[in-house]
Length: 184
Image 1: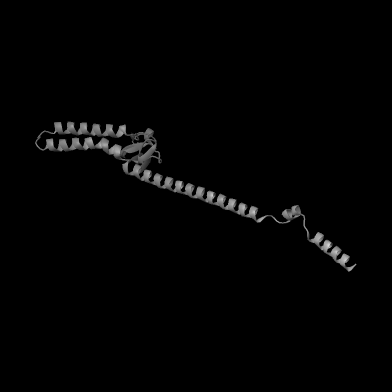
Image 2: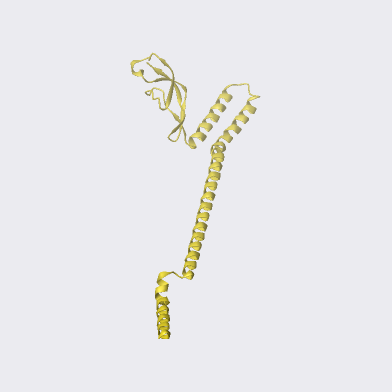
């Protein structure tokens, strides 16, 4: 009988220690799937990091390129204006050389007027506009009052009586305020 009990005990131990294979998989994930998941996560992290670095590099290149383009534009912004003014400088040099031997003032005056008109036309073609201020009401946004004087007539009160320095606009932007005398 002892032998039967021993066999029964060993059967009981075996049945208690034996775990169903499906229960084992549910209780503990396999190390293979954990390793695969870690490798997938590392690959995704490396891919995202690579995309981030590429995007950062592209932005940095864009920033450097725009800074360079901006500095090039600033350097060459006046190029068109200077190209328009250079012929007028040439005319002034020719007039100075020609006036060394001329004794009459008439041709000199005429030459200066021609050169002045050419310079004004060059500047106007580039967008420079003189502001008309004589006889208009004083506007502190585009004019600078040098002094106030009694108005010569009643209708000139609060208006510009004299234009000391002409004001200029480039497009809609005032680049030089008109210096004026205002009537009281």
